[in-house]
Length: 194
Image (cartoon, rainbow, N blue to C red):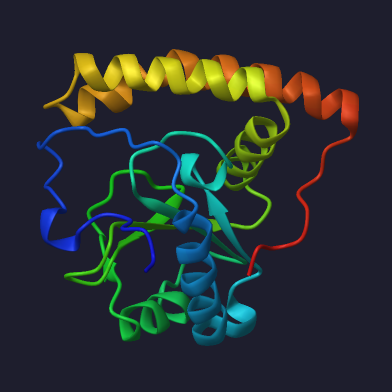
């Protein structure tokens, strides 16, 4: 039996409790399943499809939400990627205030999934890939990040926005370290995950 990612019936609105779960080996399997469906639906419109966020880092505790980044040539018009994603049941959140991406949520009743559509080569696209790759390569940074996330989840258990905001300093410290690492190693994103 596949490990439970998160019971879809318990998926909570943003104001509900922040929960950091121990790493679950089902997370990359869930991404692989989703990534294959997304690749089939989007074809060449998706330049890259990547598993990002904490669930993409082996061993790292995370909120049990699969984050997927889809890299496209342009964010406007949205129809070339929006229509195929909506046909798969994903819900377009046009009210998302972050203008460097287009944001979609899981189909109703499905495990939590966040899809971030970003312009290929943009700062925000590269940021997510570098952050992920550095945490995969540097276990000390991943451990520190997990410790801070768990502490903040306890502190801001009922306020997801405060939790996210409080993570800012550690995220920027990690990306500073990741930039140094990228300069030393000549980092470039590897091939697309799907």
